[in-house]
Length: 337
Length: 194
Image 1 (cartoon, chains in turn purple, brown):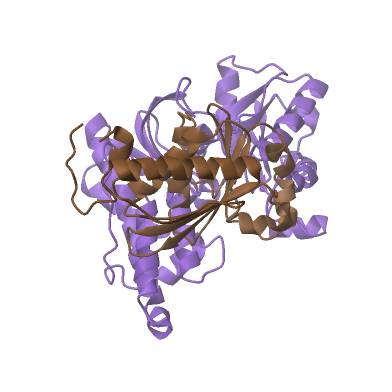
Image 2 (spheres, chains in turn purple, blue; image 1 turned 45 degrees about the horizontal axis):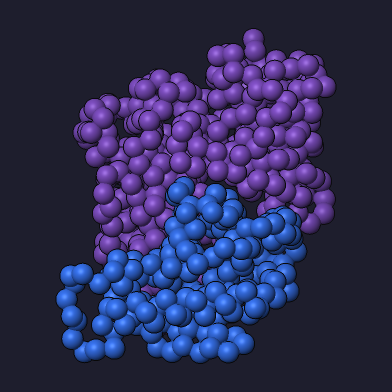
C-alpha cells in the first residue's frame, strides 16, 4: 500500500488528507467552523495567516485519523497553484519541510487537475476518456481528459466564474456571502421560469457570466422593495436556472464536438443539486454516462490533491525542493496563465 | 479615422478638468468602450501606478481592468479575481489585479500581502479599494463607474499625485484628439474611411 499525504491551502480552505493507492480515502480533513472552534480564537475569513495557524494541526489530525504516523507515509502532494500566492506558499513550505525531514518524495499538484482527480476517489467515478467541467468560485473550465494527466482545454470563462456569478447574484438578493448555497436553498421555493435571464452566447466553448450578473442588477433595480421581497425566490430560481442551463448546454455541445460518451463534473459548483439533477437527466436522455463526486469531494479538499499527487509520483515526477508556488499556474504546459 | 479614433467613437466626454487633480468624466455605451478606455490608460503607463476601481456589481470594473492590462501588454487572460483575490500577470510592468470584494475589514487586506504588491515597480489595479480604508496609497488614480442604462456607464477618472496627474492629463489629451478625429465636435459622422 502506498499512502500519500495531500495538503491544500490554495484559497479559503486549509485541508489535509491521507489517500492510499490514489483511490482510497483514509482520512480527509477540511478546516471548518468546528475545527476553528477546537483551536480557539478568531479565525480570519481568509488569507495566509489562517493557513499558517491551521496547517500543522490539520495535518496532524489527518495523519492521526488515518491511524498512522508521519513515518508511515510514502509521499507528499501539495497544491502548487493556481491560487493566492501567500496561501499557496504556506502549503508548499510545509510540504517541502516534511519531505526533507522525512526523506519522502513530494510533488506539486495543479488545483484544477486535483478537482478532476476527485472523480477517481468515489465508487461511481468514470475512467477516461471523458469530458470534465470544473466549475467553482474561481474557475469554469471545460477539459477533455483523454487519459490520466493528459488534458486538452476546450473552453473557460472569459470573465466571472460560475460560482462567483451565483455568489454575486445572491449578494444582489441580500443573501450573506458566500451566497451560492443560500441562493440554492432560496431557489427551491421559487419558479425557475419566472424570469428569463439571458443565456449569453460566446464563440467556441468558452463561458461568460458577467452580463448575466448585470441583468440581475437591472431586474432588481426596477422593482419596488416590496416587489423585490415578493420575487426573491423566483429571481434566485431563475438565475440559478440560467447558470445551470449555460453550463449544461456548453458541456453537451463540447461532448458532441469531441465525441466522448462520458461526462464528469467537478468543483464547488458541482455540489449544486439543481445542476446535478438536471445534468444527470440531460446526460442519460442523450446516452451519456455521467458522474459527479459526492459534494464533500467537489468543494476544495486535500484528498483530491493526494490522488493527483499519487499519480504524478507513480510516474516518477517527484519535485525538487526548489519547487515554487505559482499563483497563475496553467493546467497545460505552454498555456497562457 | 485612425484605429484609436474608431475605438473611441462611442465614448462621450462630459467634462475635462485640468489642474492639480485632473478629472475626466465620460460616458461609455458598452463594455467594449469601457475596455477601450482602460486600454488607452494602460498604454500610457510607464511606471508603478495604483488604480482604484469603484462602482456597484456589474458596472464594468473588471472590464476596465482588462483594458488596462491589454494596454500594458499583458497577454494572459484577465478575469474577475473576486475568488482568488489577487491575480498576477506579466506585462510591460508586472500587473497585479486585486479584488477586495470578499474582504470584510482592512486587517484582512494587510494579510493579503498588500504591502508587498504595492512596494514594487508594478501596476496595481484594485477593485473595491474602499475596503482597504487607510491602506490605499496617497498617490493614485481613481476610476468610479456608475450604471446609467443596461449598457451605458458613466466613468469618472481622477488623479492624486504628480505622476498620476500627468497620466490622466495625457489620457485627456489623447481622448480629446480622438474625439476630434472621430467627429465628436461635429453633428455628422464624417465616415469611417481613412
